[in-house]
Image (cartoon, rainbow, N blue to C red; front, side):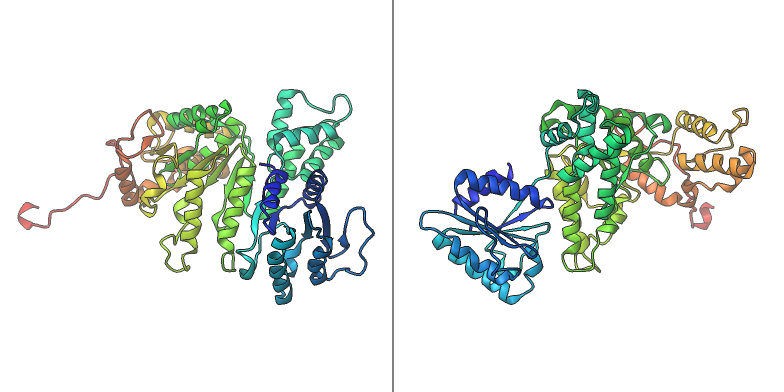
Length: 494
């Protein structure tokens, strides 16, 4: 629902305190002004620099930049049968004053009698406790794809500057999540650089946007599934599920996958390759960056990050080692901050309707609550086991080619090796100019150094998770890391 539609409903219902969260004040003011002209409502705006401004009336120099006088000025605009709206820009800056808060509360109550509406236009929602019950909060949405298309066509006015329809849709997808001004700047930058609109400048602008927020990071690498050996069942499942998102119905949109495995089995690399394979950006959620020092700041930053992800759909959202990201979600040691952040993330996982494919990875399933992996939060919970012989051969070939190692060299004993350990062996062989067999002496598999935890994870996953390597439920095989031999302490049996 657009801003003017929602605002019309609130004004007609005589909501006298309205808070609009917006980063695009000029566009919001344009919409509000057009609405007031259509509805024949009286409009006034105020900001700290320009003071009070009433369209079609002389500048009110006597009011100036005094916020108290600005609040009281709306009563002079009231009429017996009309509605007056006062828009206060960036007024959250003045709500630390007790006098301003009291004046605003009194005006909101009095506005019921003479239909005077106070609208606060601000990029953040910071409502004092005294005013919380008096304001209704609404958002000024970022531009949709139709608006972005109109902006692109308005920028690219010369022949050849606008790409064809299929390429234009790629550009519009890339621009999703930008403000109107950011989209205009990105399109203009593309015209200056390449004399036509392309997605490259848009991605540059989007990367800067995420850096400014400090909440997310954007990954756009060149590796696809061909750079990742094995995991055939997981690859096929995700590609097929994500194709359904093009059907245009939110009921068919995939939700994501939860990946469990010992360290080094390719969980993070799979997520990055997935983005390239399906043509979507990968947004990495660093939960540590969401933590704030002030009360309630961590929870607010979590909600803001999830809103950015929704706005940038279609995309892939990745949380690496999720059990460590939300460490302390039992509420101990941090006054329950991690627990509340985790609850917000769980609710979003279950309820979000945006075309976001979520990939969470974990190494220790015992630290995850059972409700995290229940149905309708993820499309599947996959276990990435140590690679099979066939998968290892594919991985060896990939990294031999990458590090230019002679294929005539025999592979070392790679029993219980992960893909990361195969890569490490090849990298060390190239770095130290050694044969693979000698480089392998510097590699100690995680299945040996952490045999007990790896064995426990595989035992837990058996019968509970889908296999990433072959269709169906994962079943533990005899190739598991050998546990220490149990010794009978009864002397007569030894």
